[in-house]
Image (tube, rainbow, N blue to C red):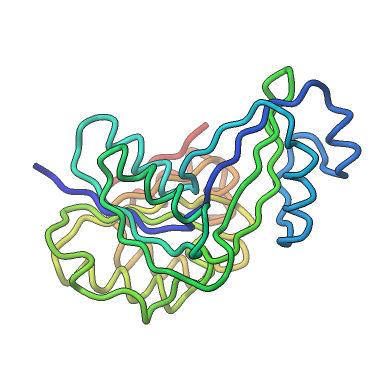
Length: 240
């Protein structure tokens, strides 16, 4: 059976169903946005939602992809970093519950969490505290974490950590793994363009991008961007 390994920001999704959008205004969260918040503001948002219907699940771009693949019956693992707290426990237990092997490193920092406020019209507004998730480093990972896997999937947000990403793709390539990346955000592409172009050209087999990300990467409109991406890797997907 093909084994798939993901690497990304380990976040606990806290999904809250709000009664109306007045709470978003009160919390100064623009509807439909994704805001990065510090631990204090994250706590205030959680306190404001305490009495509302909510649920918890492992999250983050790569973790969500691995979760979907696991639901299809594939053997999966996930590399990330969490804190030594309840959110870290929730993240690990949720992976294990869905037959995903957790390869998680522990930090003294609070675990990352994303509060997803769901409006009555189903629009989602995120307040994300990255916490321990962004402390995953090149020093944490080694060949043993990759060995035995066939496909390596990376979320685009990891592109911001050049040392970690370069080491990860070098290990995966040396082990003969197929490497895929989801570009994740056009602003991350713009801010790390030269490095990302190097990674895609030299290591990546499969690229996922939406129209904005493909435009940021190539400077071209979707169809031409798709052609350029296809010239750099084996499979290119531009989501419209």
